[in-house]
Image (cartoon, rainbow, N blue to C red; front, side):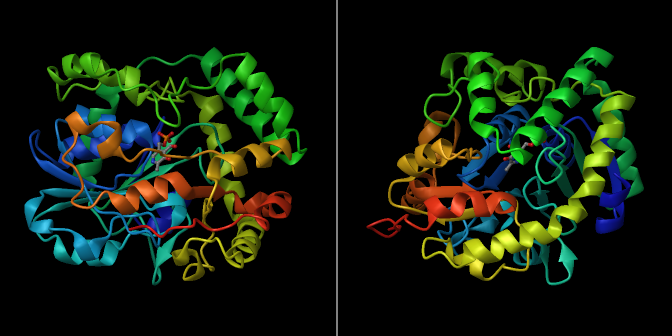
Length: 377
Ligand SMILES: Cc1ncc(COP(=O)(O)O)c(C=O)c1O
């Protein structure tokens, strides 16, 4: 956590997950019933924690350059708050948004953007709150950090966090740490295929319909009668991290800080991977403007994404962090749709996120991939 404090110059609150931090920030700064502008492309749980906070998700048009909110086409006057995504580490236009948002709320989801800056300023320092995830760049399996400007906000958020934390246990902490360590070893030793097979056999992966968890609209309507309570939304918000709001003990905290300290050591490999992948004809255009950012993943835009994923898996490269379809197609009854859903549908269908740290393993497959036949609109 000290490293995030140093990077952001902000006051930081330790959390069991990023998603709990996003919920806390939205509850702290927004009122139920307010309208929140958000990207159509992000992790499933994010939509549900926005709903749990009692907010109306207003889905933004998406920029096919970077997969984030297209700020040139949003009506900020029509919303009370904005949540950025910084998809795969590519920056949302936080300087523009924070400049236009006087009297409004900007919450930055920097789960993917722990190492991304705009100018010399780290993401996570533009809005009222920046929320980091320790399971992304650090690969710690779980953990989050909420970074805020003012001590008074920190203290109120700490109280709200403590009220929501569920009891943890040493056993759960040890299982979490062992699972995360096993993942790191499988990656390092090129054992991803057998590891994936084992995880599937043990039922360790969330069941999905395509790339999204099942929506269960009737149950969701019942949970919405209890907003802004979080626990009724657990069945959705806990996707892939069932103990997302369980208190962590010493072992888990020790492991998280160890993994966080290793992020700097991976920086060179990450940057080299970004540079190599940026040369591909299929790379998303904004990557070429961000080759000096240690991105979490490098998005390519390819014709047959699902065939590419299968071929990568045969070569021992797993693909994750796919968010398809966009929220307004996934949950039309629970969102205000984007004025132009085409670019988001195109992005969701064609994007292939690649881990730059293991770019060399993936490149033999990636070099043969072709761009989509049609453009985004
Ligand atoms: C864009 C994005 N934001 C937030 C999260 C949630 O992070 P955590 O698992 O730490 O709650 C994820 C998880 O995959 C994500 O992809």
